Length: 155
Ligand SMILES: [Zn+2]
Ligand SMILES: [Zn+2]
Image (cartoon, rainbow, N blue to C red; front, side, top):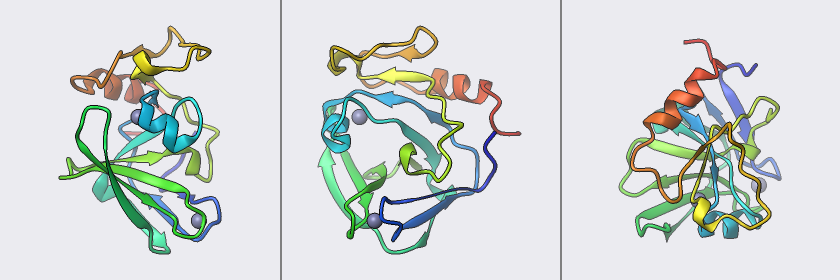
């Protein structure tokens, strides 16, 4: 079981962060931006409240791009190793998507859904145990409920 605060770093270790409160959800995103960013088939973001996320070492670089639905997204990344740490929306909605593979301990991660399955790579197997969305979910209530229902974090 995970314990708070969660901690993580970029690949080279120059940037470190901590998360003081329980994440809202973890899911797989198969959008074309995540395929480019990860250099793989999908990403596994962990949504956290922005005010629970703190950089504890280093000074991340920032870049912006348009999401698959046209909203402005920004990314925080390490200027030394190029590793993406977290993404957010501009203007902010108070939530950051931390790249869950950058956590120090990834052993407890359980994605509860798959989004943008319409652009998933053909070999990707979808589990019936995860919620599925063809594109961006209209709202995230079902994903939030599924994640908190796992009981990974004490309330
Ligand atoms: Zn780095
Ligand atoms: Zn995505």
